[in-house]
Amino acid sequence: MKAGYYMAFFALGAILGSFFNMLIYRLPRNISIVAPRSFCPHCGKQLKWWHNIPIVSYLLLGGKCYYCKSPIGVRYLLVEIITALTLVLLYAKFGLTEKMLWASLFLLPLIPAAFIDLEHYILPDSATIGTLVWGLISSVGHISPVSIKASVIGALVCGGAFLAVAFLSKGGMGLGDVKLAASFGANFGLKVGVTSLFVSVLLGALVGIALMLLRKKGRKDRIPFGPFMVLGAYACTFFGKELARLYLGF
Image (cartoon, rainbow, N blue to C red):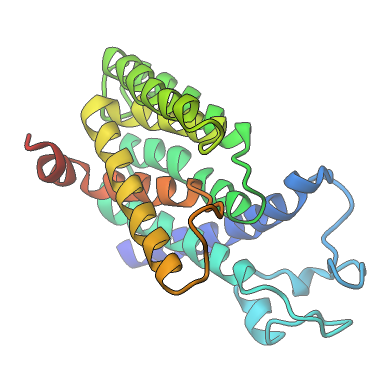
């Protein structure tokens, strides 16, 4: 029976990932998500339904457009696989429970947000403010792991800390990061919320240093921080208490 659930959640996640790919392409370009139908960004031809089967179509087409044979970015495949695995792992962690509902509506919107930030240095409000509001609502409904008091305090402290950093850095950190930090506090509470930000900063620093050593980036080059924050959120959704003990000692 559980195998059937794993397969169902993988398939659902892959379908959601296909939708996320549309959001990643269209939202920053102010293209409607309703119309037109899916099209090749290179030749503009509308795609048929069988060109859009999640994961399968990418592999069958060899990562190329059916019409013009232009390469399709590997991002399309990655997003579908990541989204599918996210739902599978959340089911493995929480089962069919309210906590899985909380974690799904918190983590899934962060996937397109991370990829949009990677390409455009933008974290959309629909993801940052949306998950912040969800954290508060889910705490009121006793769906999230924290109380409404802990959620509000976490949002204020985590968001306030990043707001101070954004102010002191004079543009080095965007307000999208601030809103996302507040979202983490609202969903995790103060202790795990702060831990998720520590993890994000550590990952960002390590990757930044590696890129500079490889001469891919200079000291003054911009590196989007949103994807590292999303990784921190994932880590703390699955291992929040353990990481909090490691970072904070309690």
